[in-house]
Image (cartoon, rainbow, N blue to C red; front, side, top):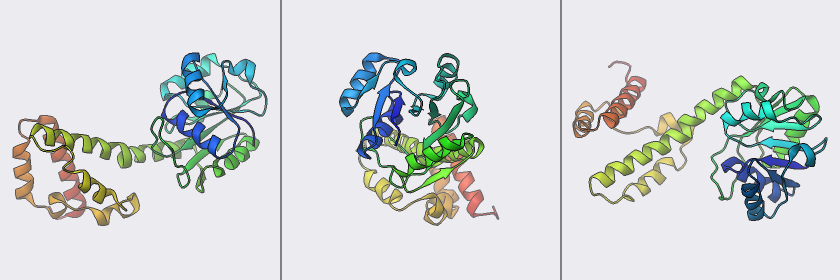
Length: 257
């Protein structure tokens, strides 16, 4: 397996560097800030590079694990001819890094990761893409070292997968934040709903979500919904969210309304 260079120091950079290292693959890190890169490398006990242009060679796989809006800037400033260069962004076209190298691709683990936690990619979809046939083979092999679920997806398909992931992961997490705020504002223990959340999401996946749906909107209990909206009348944002979601659930399950 080729040497992997992770460029970045955020959540995904950490997760991939950790995963590659523990899969027995040679990995090192690089980035814009030398101090952050050195600290990042020290935490993982792996080497660091200060210059991608000077310290990499043909055959190295460079994964740009940076914020989406940083990729166009790297496309303008970074030149790595002969290297294999990939980004790991869900909603960015592979063409966004085409000026960096003639051999570009995407290596996108569709998984929730957080900085300094232990990642688990074993069953996570690893979405890959490249117009370079050799790099595509390498990315398949690389993904297979981390996961049993490696998928070749076009940029368009990957964007839609990323959009769906927002609904499945980010939005539900935000809803839990809002629920916690309601508890605190009403002098209730902020851990009151922790067990409910565990029970709700235990075994709940998109493929069976319809069967798991419960609540007043699922039952079209207009009286309870009206009571809840009354409780939220002094919070326009939460009232709007509650009203919209309740309407969409009822529309899905009660076409006669």
